[in-house]
Length: 305
Image 1 (cartoon, rainbow, N blue to C red):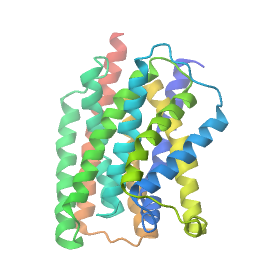
Image 2: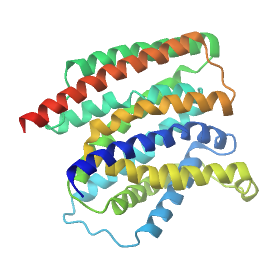
Image 3: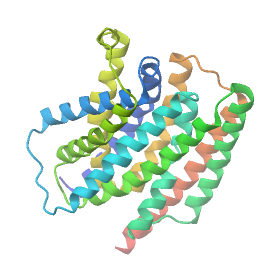
Image 4: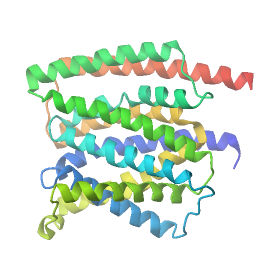
């Protein structure tokens, strides 16, 4: 496949994944009525691992033992830390707020990736966009505390989830340079995610009641999260990160809040205030500024090369 085709497909995969991931906030919110955050995460991770094993049953042989640390780190930050923080935040605040706050993850991806990789840098307008978007987040949070009675801790946990995602993106970019099969890479990341979740499940005395698991609503949401959002979603996202870069891929996180907010209103019947709408608009403006500058920077970089 030519590099041009990889670039086009990378953008398509990243955008499609975010449309799908936008629904995960709502789907997870439904499951949190029945299960602990760790139980939801562990179940979807196991389903994803089994699906990826079925697709690619071959063992991944690493060229160097130290590479194992990168896979373990990706499992810790991308599967355990990110989703535990996100799922816990969903128990404290609205799904729409979590979706919008986490949508600012591209800025943290840019910081993390820019620190470790000199070939992916962000210009001044990228950070101007960040300031504008953060103003929108503050507006949403203040509106939530005043009108929607949100717990500020929930917004804080969603903020920490963004940082975790930035770490994960940097690790996946490095792993992508080794050119291992993407299905095997994603499966190994999930393996470590499952491994790190076991102590959490023991500490929280997790349990799954079969009668609840077999409810159509519960089963459908778990299958969506495990097979679609986790197995297929992470596989496509990791491949897009390898083909078009971590920062370009992360830009498509901007699509997620739109899906999340619409589904939150339609499915969860959550309310939207004018302040929330204005805050979301500020986030969108900030992200557009950042995206435009990033594309200009990349075109200049490609021209020089």
